Length: 381
Image 1: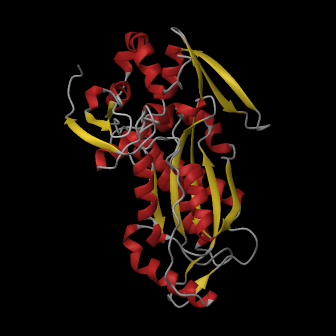
Image 2: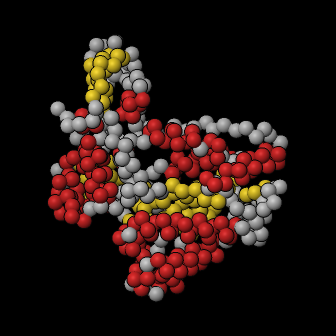
Image 3: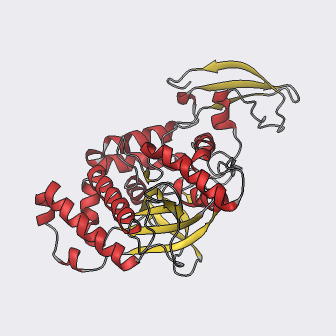
Protein backbone atom coordinates (compact mmCIF):
# COMPACT_ATOMS: atom_id res chain seq x y z
CA UNK A 1 0.00 0.00 0.00
CA UNK A 2 3.02 2.30 -0.11
CA UNK A 3 2.80 3.23 -3.81
CA UNK A 4 -0.51 5.09 -3.67
CA UNK A 5 -2.62 7.00 -1.26
CA UNK A 6 -4.59 4.79 1.10
CA UNK A 7 -8.35 5.21 0.82
CA UNK A 8 -11.19 4.03 3.00
CA UNK A 9 -12.27 1.72 0.17
CA UNK A 10 -8.91 -0.09 0.48
CA UNK A 11 -9.48 -0.57 4.20
CA UNK A 12 -13.01 -1.88 3.72
CA UNK A 13 -12.00 -4.33 0.99
CA UNK A 14 -9.17 -5.77 3.04
CA UNK A 15 -10.61 -5.79 6.56
CA UNK A 16 -14.41 -5.91 6.40
CA UNK A 17 -14.67 -9.72 6.51
CA UNK A 18 -13.34 -9.89 10.07
CA UNK A 19 -15.71 -7.15 11.18
CA UNK A 20 -18.77 -8.70 9.54
CA UNK A 21 -17.92 -12.10 11.05
CA UNK A 22 -18.01 -10.59 14.54
CA UNK A 23 -20.67 -7.90 14.29
CA UNK A 24 -22.65 -8.58 11.14
CA UNK A 25 -25.71 -9.65 13.10
CA UNK A 26 -25.79 -6.25 14.85
CA UNK A 27 -25.35 -4.07 11.76
CA UNK A 28 -28.10 -1.74 10.57
CA UNK A 29 -29.12 -1.96 6.89
CA UNK A 30 -27.52 1.45 6.29
CA UNK A 31 -24.21 0.17 7.69
CA UNK A 32 -24.27 -2.96 5.53
CA UNK A 33 -25.01 -0.86 2.48
CA UNK A 34 -22.20 1.57 3.34
CA UNK A 35 -19.64 -1.24 3.47
CA UNK A 36 -20.88 -2.79 0.24
CA UNK A 37 -20.98 0.52 -1.61
CA UNK A 38 -17.57 1.73 -0.41
CA UNK A 39 -15.97 -1.61 -1.27
CA UNK A 40 -17.35 -1.33 -4.82
CA UNK A 41 -16.64 2.39 -5.21
CA UNK A 42 -14.82 3.21 -8.46
CA UNK A 43 -14.53 -0.39 -9.50
CA UNK A 44 -16.02 -2.19 -12.50
CA UNK A 45 -19.03 -3.14 -10.37
CA UNK A 46 -20.12 0.52 -10.39
CA UNK A 47 -19.89 0.76 -14.15
CA UNK A 48 -17.86 3.37 -15.97
CA UNK A 49 -16.50 4.92 -19.15
CA UNK A 50 -13.54 3.78 -21.23
CA UNK A 51 -11.50 6.46 -22.96
CA UNK A 52 -8.53 6.66 -25.30
CA UNK A 53 -6.03 9.50 -25.06
CA UNK A 54 -5.47 11.28 -28.38
CA UNK A 55 -2.02 12.43 -27.27
CA UNK A 56 -0.36 9.27 -25.92
CA UNK A 57 -2.70 6.68 -27.44
CA UNK A 58 -3.30 4.84 -24.15
CA UNK A 59 -6.79 3.64 -23.22
CA UNK A 60 -8.12 3.70 -19.66
CA UNK A 61 -11.28 3.19 -17.61
CA UNK A 62 -12.90 5.72 -15.28
CA UNK A 63 -15.24 3.88 -12.96
CA UNK A 64 -18.16 5.56 -11.21
CA UNK A 65 -18.34 6.40 -7.54
CA UNK A 66 -20.78 4.65 -5.21
CA UNK A 67 -22.41 7.93 -4.08
CA UNK A 68 -22.99 6.59 -0.59
CA UNK A 69 -23.08 9.57 1.76
CA UNK A 70 -20.65 7.83 4.13
CA UNK A 71 -18.04 7.48 1.38
CA UNK A 72 -15.30 10.13 1.59
CA UNK A 73 -14.57 9.97 -2.15
CA UNK A 74 -17.99 10.61 -3.64
CA UNK A 75 -19.28 14.10 -2.92
CA UNK A 76 -17.33 16.58 -5.00
CA UNK A 77 -20.07 17.31 -7.53
CA UNK A 78 -22.82 17.07 -4.91
CA UNK A 79 -21.06 19.70 -2.82
CA UNK A 80 -20.68 22.08 -5.76
CA UNK A 81 -24.31 21.70 -6.79
CA UNK A 82 -25.60 22.09 -3.24
CA UNK A 83 -23.55 25.22 -2.66
CA UNK A 84 -24.79 26.74 -5.89
CA UNK A 85 -28.37 26.04 -4.84
CA UNK A 86 -27.83 27.95 -1.58
CA UNK A 87 -27.19 31.25 -3.36
CA UNK A 88 -30.78 32.43 -3.05
CA UNK A 89 -30.75 31.91 0.73
CA UNK A 90 -27.67 33.95 1.62
CA UNK A 91 -28.13 37.19 3.51
CA UNK A 92 -25.48 39.96 3.82
CA UNK A 93 -25.61 40.04 7.60
CA UNK A 94 -23.68 38.91 10.65
CA UNK A 95 -23.69 35.22 11.49
CA UNK A 96 -23.31 33.30 14.74
CA UNK A 97 -22.06 29.78 15.34
CA UNK A 98 -23.81 27.72 18.02
CA UNK A 99 -22.85 24.21 19.16
CA UNK A 100 -25.10 22.04 21.35
CA UNK A 101 -23.82 18.72 22.72
CA UNK A 102 -25.56 15.59 23.95
CA UNK A 103 -24.47 14.68 27.54
CA UNK A 104 -22.47 11.51 27.97
CA UNK A 105 -25.16 9.92 30.19
CA UNK A 106 -27.67 9.60 27.34
CA UNK A 107 -25.41 8.90 24.35
CA UNK A 108 -26.20 5.19 24.53
CA UNK A 109 -29.86 6.10 24.00
CA UNK A 110 -28.94 8.04 20.87
CA UNK A 111 -26.85 5.18 19.51
CA UNK A 112 -29.62 2.62 20.06
CA UNK A 113 -32.46 4.73 18.59
CA UNK A 114 -30.68 7.05 16.21
CA UNK A 115 -33.37 8.40 13.92
CA UNK A 116 -35.72 9.22 16.79
CA UNK A 117 -33.09 10.67 19.13
CA UNK A 118 -31.24 12.74 16.52
CA UNK A 119 -34.49 14.19 15.19
CA UNK A 120 -35.79 15.03 18.66
CA UNK A 121 -32.53 16.68 19.65
CA UNK A 122 -32.28 18.79 16.49
CA UNK A 123 -35.89 19.98 16.79
CA UNK A 124 -35.41 20.75 20.48
CA UNK A 125 -32.27 22.82 19.90
CA UNK A 126 -33.82 24.74 17.00
CA UNK A 127 -36.97 25.49 18.99
CA UNK A 128 -34.96 26.72 21.96
CA UNK A 129 -32.85 29.05 19.77
CA UNK A 130 -35.92 30.41 17.97
CA UNK A 131 -37.81 31.08 21.22
CA UNK A 132 -34.87 32.82 22.92
CA UNK A 133 -34.04 34.99 19.92
CA UNK A 134 -37.73 35.88 19.70
CA UNK A 135 -37.41 37.59 23.08
CA UNK A 136 -37.05 41.36 22.60
CA UNK A 137 -34.19 41.38 25.14
CA UNK A 138 -32.02 39.50 22.64
CA UNK A 139 -33.27 39.88 19.08
CA UNK A 140 -37.03 40.17 18.93
CA UNK A 141 -37.26 38.33 15.63
CA UNK A 142 -36.87 34.87 14.12
CA UNK A 143 -33.40 34.22 12.66
CA UNK A 144 -32.41 31.88 9.86
CA UNK A 145 -30.89 28.62 11.09
CA UNK A 146 -28.89 26.01 9.20
CA UNK A 147 -28.17 23.02 11.43
CA UNK A 148 -25.88 20.06 10.78
CA UNK A 149 -25.49 16.93 12.91
CA UNK A 150 -22.03 15.60 13.77
CA UNK A 151 -21.51 12.42 15.79
CA UNK A 152 -17.74 11.98 16.01
CA UNK A 153 -14.51 13.05 17.68
CA UNK A 154 -11.11 13.20 16.02
CA UNK A 155 -10.49 9.57 16.94
CA UNK A 156 -13.98 8.61 15.70
CA UNK A 157 -15.42 8.24 19.18
CA UNK A 158 -19.17 8.70 19.59
CA UNK A 159 -19.97 12.30 20.49
CA UNK A 160 -23.31 13.49 19.02
CA UNK A 161 -23.66 17.26 18.72
CA UNK A 162 -25.10 19.84 16.36
CA UNK A 163 -23.56 22.90 14.71
CA UNK A 164 -25.83 25.83 13.88
CA UNK A 165 -25.20 28.76 11.57
CA UNK A 166 -27.59 31.48 12.75
CA UNK A 167 -28.26 34.84 11.12
CA UNK A 168 -27.48 37.76 13.41
CA UNK A 169 -30.89 39.26 12.80
CA UNK A 170 -34.37 38.66 11.51
CA UNK A 171 -37.46 40.30 10.05
CA UNK A 172 -39.67 42.12 12.56
CA UNK A 173 -43.20 40.88 13.24
CA UNK A 174 -44.67 43.70 11.15
CA UNK A 175 -42.20 42.87 8.34
CA UNK A 176 -41.12 46.50 8.13
CA UNK A 177 -37.59 46.30 9.55
CA UNK A 178 -34.55 44.10 10.04
CA UNK A 179 -33.87 43.47 13.74
CA UNK A 180 -30.38 42.89 15.12
CA UNK A 181 -29.18 41.93 18.62
CA UNK A 182 -28.60 44.95 20.87
CA UNK A 183 -25.15 43.83 22.02
CA UNK A 184 -22.19 41.78 20.95
CA UNK A 185 -23.81 38.41 21.73
CA UNK A 186 -26.86 36.77 20.22
CA UNK A 187 -28.33 34.94 23.22
CA UNK A 188 -27.34 33.74 26.72
CA UNK A 189 -25.65 30.35 26.60
CA UNK A 190 -26.64 29.28 30.13
CA UNK A 191 -30.31 29.97 29.46
CA UNK A 192 -30.08 28.10 26.17
CA UNK A 193 -28.50 25.06 27.84
CA UNK A 194 -31.20 24.88 30.51
CA UNK A 195 -33.98 25.29 27.98
CA UNK A 196 -32.63 22.53 25.71
CA UNK A 197 -32.23 20.11 28.63
CA UNK A 198 -35.69 20.79 30.02
CA UNK A 199 -37.47 20.51 26.70
CA UNK A 200 -35.62 17.37 25.64
CA UNK A 201 -36.42 15.78 29.02
CA UNK A 202 -40.13 16.54 28.71
CA UNK A 203 -40.33 15.40 25.09
CA UNK A 204 -38.44 12.17 25.79
CA UNK A 205 -40.63 11.36 28.78
CA UNK A 206 -43.73 11.79 26.65
CA UNK A 207 -42.51 9.92 23.56
CA UNK A 208 -40.34 7.20 25.14
CA UNK A 209 -41.36 6.80 28.82
CA UNK A 210 -39.44 3.52 29.24
CA UNK A 211 -36.23 5.03 27.90
CA UNK A 212 -36.73 8.09 30.07
CA UNK A 213 -37.19 5.96 33.20
CA UNK A 214 -33.91 4.14 32.53
CA UNK A 215 -31.81 7.31 32.64
CA UNK A 216 -30.05 8.51 35.81
CA UNK A 217 -31.52 11.59 37.48
CA UNK A 218 -28.26 13.51 37.21
CA UNK A 219 -28.83 13.63 33.45
CA UNK A 220 -31.25 16.50 33.97
CA UNK A 221 -29.50 18.19 36.90
CA UNK A 222 -26.15 18.94 35.29
CA UNK A 223 -25.75 21.69 32.68
CA UNK A 224 -25.83 20.65 29.03
CA UNK A 225 -22.92 22.02 27.05
CA UNK A 226 -23.62 24.76 24.51
CA UNK A 227 -21.40 27.32 22.84
CA UNK A 228 -22.11 30.49 20.87
CA UNK A 229 -19.82 33.01 19.19
CA UNK A 230 -19.86 35.57 16.42
CA UNK A 231 -18.81 33.79 13.23
CA UNK A 232 -18.45 36.48 10.60
CA UNK A 233 -20.36 38.65 8.19
CA UNK A 234 -21.74 38.20 4.70
CA UNK A 235 -21.36 35.55 2.05
CA UNK A 236 -17.83 34.47 2.96
CA UNK A 237 -18.94 33.56 6.48
CA UNK A 238 -21.52 31.19 5.02
CA UNK A 239 -19.07 29.61 2.60
CA UNK A 240 -16.52 29.14 5.39
CA UNK A 241 -19.13 27.51 7.60
CA UNK A 242 -20.34 25.16 4.89
CA UNK A 243 -16.78 24.17 4.04
CA UNK A 244 -15.88 23.52 7.65
CA UNK A 245 -19.00 21.86 9.01
CA UNK A 246 -21.78 20.99 6.57
CA UNK A 247 -20.00 18.38 4.46
CA UNK A 248 -17.75 16.64 6.92
CA UNK A 249 -17.99 12.93 7.54
CA UNK A 250 -16.32 10.94 10.30
CA UNK A 251 -13.14 10.25 8.32
CA UNK A 252 -11.65 11.60 5.09
CA UNK A 253 -9.20 9.72 2.92
CA UNK A 254 -6.56 12.34 3.59
CA UNK A 255 -6.38 11.29 7.24
CA UNK A 256 -5.43 7.68 6.51
CA UNK A 257 -1.72 7.08 7.11
CA UNK A 258 -1.04 3.34 6.92
CA UNK A 259 -2.68 -0.06 6.75
CA UNK A 260 -1.56 -3.68 7.00
CA UNK A 261 -3.45 -6.95 7.20
CA UNK A 262 -4.68 -6.33 10.75
CA UNK A 263 -4.40 -2.63 11.66
CA UNK A 264 -5.17 0.86 10.37
CA UNK A 265 -3.38 4.09 11.32
CA UNK A 266 -4.97 7.50 10.82
CA UNK A 267 -4.17 11.02 11.92
CA UNK A 268 -6.29 13.40 13.94
CA UNK A 269 -5.95 16.82 15.52
CA UNK A 270 -5.83 16.97 19.30
CA UNK A 271 -8.57 19.38 20.32
CA UNK A 272 -6.80 20.95 23.31
CA UNK A 273 -3.49 21.75 21.61
CA UNK A 274 -4.26 21.59 17.88
CA UNK A 275 -1.35 19.16 17.55
CA UNK A 276 -1.54 16.47 14.85
CA UNK A 277 -1.36 12.93 16.25
CA UNK A 278 -1.88 9.40 14.96
CA UNK A 279 -4.13 6.61 16.19
CA UNK A 280 -3.54 2.92 15.37
CA UNK A 281 -6.47 0.53 15.67
CA UNK A 282 -7.25 -3.03 14.70
CA UNK A 283 -9.26 -3.26 11.52
CA UNK A 284 -12.30 -4.46 13.46
CA UNK A 285 -12.16 -1.55 15.90
CA UNK A 286 -11.52 0.95 13.11
CA UNK A 287 -14.60 -0.21 11.19
CA UNK A 288 -16.67 -0.37 14.38
CA UNK A 289 -15.91 3.28 15.10
CA UNK A 290 -16.47 4.36 11.51
CA UNK A 291 -19.83 2.60 11.21
CA UNK A 292 -21.16 4.25 14.38
CA UNK A 293 -21.35 7.43 12.30
CA UNK A 294 -23.23 5.98 9.33
CA UNK A 295 -26.66 7.57 9.60
CA UNK A 296 -29.94 5.67 9.28
CA UNK A 297 -31.56 5.52 5.86
CA UNK A 298 -33.70 8.56 5.13
CA UNK A 299 -32.27 10.69 7.94
CA UNK A 300 -31.36 14.27 6.98
CA UNK A 301 -28.35 15.60 8.85
CA UNK A 302 -28.73 19.10 7.33
CA UNK A 303 -31.89 20.94 8.36
CA UNK A 304 -33.32 24.44 8.05
CA UNK A 305 -35.34 26.32 10.64
CA UNK A 306 -36.77 29.76 11.28
CA UNK A 307 -36.25 32.27 8.49
CA UNK A 308 -34.53 29.61 6.35
CA UNK A 309 -37.34 27.07 6.61
CA UNK A 310 -38.76 26.28 3.14
CA UNK A 311 -42.15 27.66 4.20
CA UNK A 312 -40.60 31.10 4.88
CA UNK A 313 -39.36 31.92 1.40
CA UNK A 314 -41.47 35.08 1.29
CA UNK A 315 -39.71 36.31 4.43
CA UNK A 316 -36.30 35.46 2.97
CA UNK A 317 -37.01 37.78 0.05
CA UNK A 318 -38.24 40.45 2.46
CA UNK A 319 -35.06 40.09 4.52
CA UNK A 320 -32.85 40.57 1.46
CA UNK A 321 -34.75 43.71 0.49
CA UNK A 322 -34.56 45.18 4.00
CA UNK A 323 -30.84 44.48 4.28
CA UNK A 324 -30.19 45.97 0.83
CA UNK A 325 -32.02 49.14 1.88
CA UNK A 326 -29.98 49.32 5.10
CA UNK A 327 -26.69 49.04 3.24
CA UNK A 328 -27.72 51.10 0.23
CA UNK A 329 -26.79 48.28 -2.13
CA UNK A 330 -28.65 46.42 -4.91
CA UNK A 331 -30.58 43.46 -3.56
CA UNK A 332 -29.09 41.10 -6.14
CA UNK A 333 -26.21 38.99 -4.83
CA UNK A 334 -24.14 36.14 -6.17
CA UNK A 335 -22.00 33.50 -4.51
CA UNK A 336 -18.52 32.59 -5.61
CA UNK A 337 -18.67 28.89 -4.74
CA UNK A 338 -15.52 27.66 -3.04
CA UNK A 339 -14.06 24.48 -4.47
CA UNK A 340 -14.72 22.03 -1.65
CA UNK A 341 -14.42 18.96 -3.85
CA UNK A 342 -10.67 18.37 -3.75
CA UNK A 343 -10.74 15.98 -0.81
CA UNK A 344 -13.66 14.07 -2.26
CA UNK A 345 -12.38 13.78 -5.81
CA UNK A 346 -9.08 15.56 -6.49
CA UNK A 347 -8.90 14.38 -10.10
CA UNK A 348 -12.51 15.19 -10.93
CA UNK A 349 -12.65 11.90 -12.83
CA UNK A 350 -14.73 9.71 -10.55
CA UNK A 351 -17.92 11.76 -10.70
CA UNK A 352 -17.53 14.06 -13.69
CA UNK A 353 -17.25 11.10 -16.08
CA UNK A 354 -20.90 10.39 -15.38
CA UNK A 355 -21.87 13.90 -16.50
CA UNK A 356 -20.00 13.83 -19.79
CA UNK A 357 -16.92 15.84 -18.77
CA UNK A 358 -13.56 14.88 -20.27
CA UNK A 359 -11.31 13.23 -17.67
CA UNK A 360 -7.54 13.57 -17.50
CA UNK A 361 -5.47 10.75 -18.95
CA UNK A 362 -3.77 8.95 -16.04
CA UNK A 363 -0.72 8.25 -18.24
CA UNK A 364 0.13 11.73 -19.56
CA UNK A 365 -2.40 14.12 -17.96
CA UNK A 366 -3.95 15.25 -21.24
CA UNK A 367 -7.67 15.96 -21.46
CA UNK A 368 -7.73 15.32 -25.20
CA UNK A 369 -9.54 12.01 -24.87
CA UNK A 370 -12.18 10.11 -26.85
CA UNK A 371 -14.95 8.02 -25.32
CA UNK A 372 -14.75 4.37 -26.44
CA UNK A 373 -17.52 2.66 -24.49
CA UNK A 374 -19.80 2.87 -21.45
CA UNK A 375 -20.31 0.01 -19.01
CA UNK A 376 -23.43 -0.21 -16.83
CA UNK A 377 -23.34 -1.26 -13.19
CA UNK A 378 -22.94 -4.95 -12.62
CA UNK A 379 -20.42 -7.68 -11.74
CA UNK A 380 -16.88 -6.75 -12.66
CA UNK A 381 -14.64 -8.73 -15.05
